[in-house]
Length: 162
Ligand SMILES: [Zn+2]
Image (cartoon, rainbow, N blue to C red):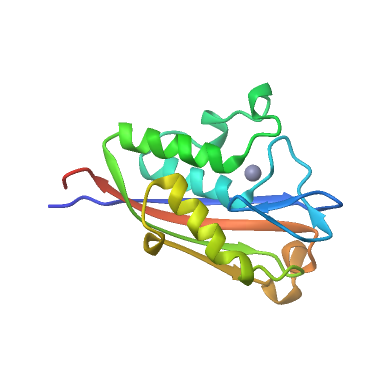
């Protein structure tokens, strides 16, 4: 019997004027972006939390501490690539990813396929296994108003050969 394991991840960061907005490894032209230790890519951060949850191995901060000087100016997509190797070492393959990004003031849809391609490449899976959706929150709350950007991700992994 195949024993799939699911994982759930969430992240949110504040947005600031004149900072780069990087989501799924795509730098999106926008008036606001993340001012964080790494590139602030909430989608990648949520995804790593979901992967870590699926294999019950800590969380983003356990594996990529924010105060690690190596994380400064790091690309979060590279963290996804690194952590997918951790999932493989634990003996699991990734069945699929489903994620959404919440931001009301920037049109994300034109960049979704590039994000999917980046994430699929980092995970070593087919783009058809990666779903990314964009929500506006109908203008409500910090994400809707564009003072923050949030992401949610879920993954399913299964034992290799299972
Ligand atoms: Zn984060």
